[in-house]
Image (cartoon, rainbow, N blue to C red; front, side, top):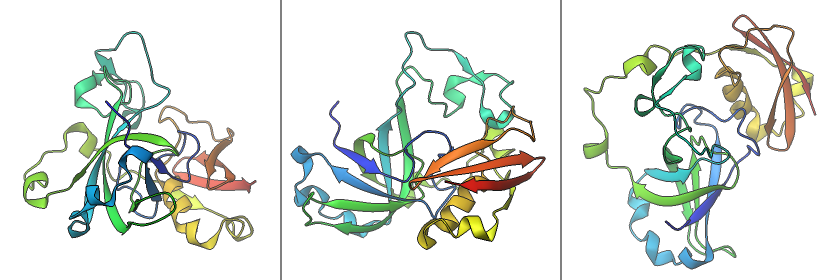
Length: 221
């Protein structure tokens, strides 16, 4: 398969990226096409949709052998589930699938057509292999059952972000970083209130500790 584009986001690293698309609506991204695919005609009609599917490649998860079971982080990292019952990146083929909101399209720029999207769950420069329109009549199943993932979908932390620290973050990105921290970026089996973590976001290192269900930001560098 050929890479058709890459996405620009505020996450240079995997740590902190939401576990699913749409969980943090405030997170923005820009899809930049490879030179071979910068023909505006390839996007004709896409303006009629407000959500799209992205098929992309997980990076840094390459393994010689695939595992039949994985340990989903949201289940504490100690319960095994079948790999095909999860969205784990450790799969026979490292393919990711995300549904993101299409905010706007720029057809004519120095870098060719650009797609501005939100609700992303991809790190910076993630390779994209295909883009398809989201069709509500076919893709939305109102009778769908969420399995074990549904049991933990509402989990989030209370975030304490001192004013003198959050003011270091550009105004347009403050809601996004707070929403990211609410999702609890840590591995679920970590439970050390003295341990300090750091999320790289928009050029800043946001450092925090977690005690119970309360996350406190302690520094922004």
